[in-house]
Image (cartoon, rainbow, N blue to C red; front, side):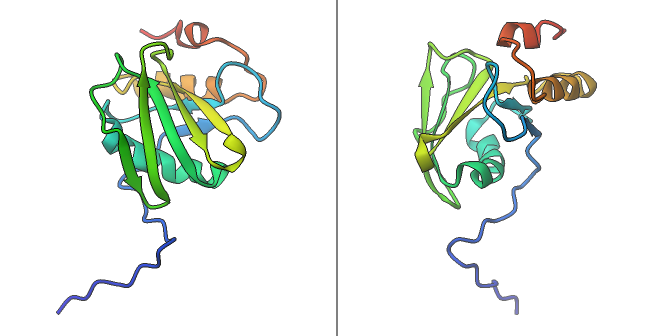
Length: 148
């Protein structure tokens, strides 16, 4: 007989896959993005839980995520994750290659460069490292200019 282990309420389950994410070191913000994220697909409901588990360490609790409506397929308005309910909001005005995550603690926010899922791994790694470099102040178009 198999029993299910007891899981405490504030225990965060491990993500199904590791978020491919690089963030700038903690320091005063510079540039257009705070780092880069390379999702495995364009399915926000499937991709966000592993990303938000990692980002919850910096943002404590996550209130909402904003994204570009035209760059992602339809997504639910809310996503229930281990740390709570997260509101997803799509905007046509948001840059298509960014995602913004807003925390509840001090309304802190992170804006991430989104590397397209089909990007070649070596190039994706380069984009993530460039976006996360402490002194990088490149705009989104400059960061992605070398994308094939």
